[in-house]
Length: 465
Ligand code: ASP
Ligand code: MG
Image 1: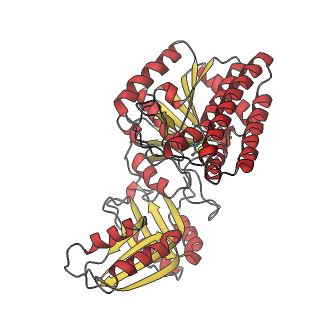
Image 2: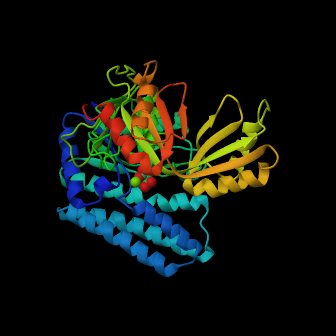
Image 3: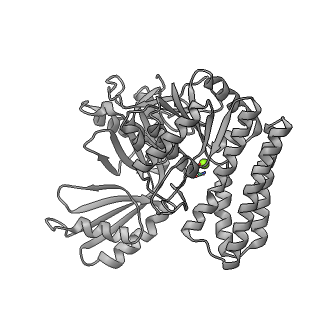
């Protein structure tokens, strides 16, 4: 099989894990063609982002402290991961070159006290530069021939939208397939840094946080991989948050569409665009644990065979939101909703859920708690007394979503759900179901969230996979 395997920062955060992973990769590579994609070692990107803020505050002292921490951590992991002197020395030299570049960049940036979006991408690209060298040299240490490449070196080309760049698909496909196939032909195992690419002028760009998932799916698509594995610290996608119900378990199989819905609810968050490259060739993805290799995880594919016995696959929640109920003389008026949503958009508010009753007398929206004040203020300033007569706010509400493509066309799901909720003596504040019927969502108070999820999980028999 041609496999792309992506490791997150957690799974490569100690030398013990790195050695385990590399032994596993060596074993896999004897019968498969393997391409590895790595994130930065745990917390490195966060620290680099922090450093960027400190540059603007010209806080040289704290920056030096944080840089020393990054250097110490990487060197310690490198030293402990590799026991062959020659390989270890070669790695240390490579790491030192990167550390020098990083220091040089920062001393320049500190003089000006400014980080542009372009220089921020350059700065935060260092995490993956460091991690690929450590992984690749550990593989060499185990006599597994390997070759490290940054996103730029493997040929990922993007537009110049720094911080959330868009892929230039055709150029990237040509570059990446040529580069990787030539390495695989030489029996080398490519270890590629995720998250990072370069624009047409060669400037470093990034795909936004968690972008390594996206890099991995891009690579899988470019080389027409048979499967892609996203390895992290969870065993796969879960039927519910294990912190809410101990009976939750790993889903064996879901469709891309279901995985995209689940992703929004974030138990195992994948980069939002990561599924896109897989759709053309229908490349299946597995979400697996890097620590529990015996577990095959959740298999995500294009298969839409909906499970009639299990119309609901999982129940996910987003707690701590605000509900805004907007009432007014909106009946029959065109453009009211547009005005409300453009007001919110101008205030930088992300709307998570919307519902309007057919009488058009009110529109309800759900926003994150941190956006609530901003949202209400902007509506009051711009629309209250004109279009809008009254604004009611409910704080501390949870979104509960039941997800499963088998709900489509299955009669009685909603009635069962709301029957269970009423038996719990819980009030439902708002209900939304998209016409895709993939997701049935409703709003209740935060205080009722856990008990409702537990009951629904039980009643839909989700612990029996
Ligand atoms: N290192 C980057 C981040 O922490 C990209 C990734 O891990 O996927 O966001
Ligand atoms: Mg990460």
